[in-house]
Length: 186
Image (tube, rainbow, N blue to C red; front, top):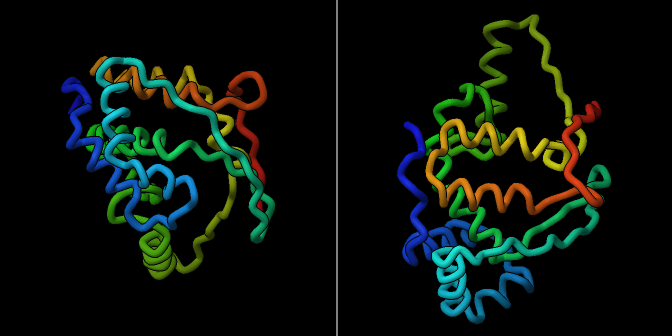
């Protein structure tokens, strides 16, 4: 399936994106503030998307120190609703093109499913090896121009592509986006 039918920017789709984004999340202050005027916020987002005036806001950055120090950048709640809208549009187009054993952020997959699949492989191939690696700053280092070109191969709808470009180009490191990859093993 090619994404020739454009993204649904209707109010119903925006409400659904809010519901799916909001589901299971801990209520932060930003979530409370957005939800306090939820109807007005979603109506304004709808108008901005339909009128083509939507602009991605800035990111809020902070450091998390659990088992290692990680710098996290988070979009506003409003922008994350748009990200969910894009996700819901892009998954049916792209999911079937991924290799079966890609486990992150896919319906019916996740950490437990990945562990179970690995255990199956180890039973079948008991002398096999498992390589655990981390690509340092993976999302920070994706070349935005390459990503947009890859999206354009299967996503032909103009509004969807414009919204995807806006989201992709919204994040930069320092003064510009960078396209290299740094490998770091744990």
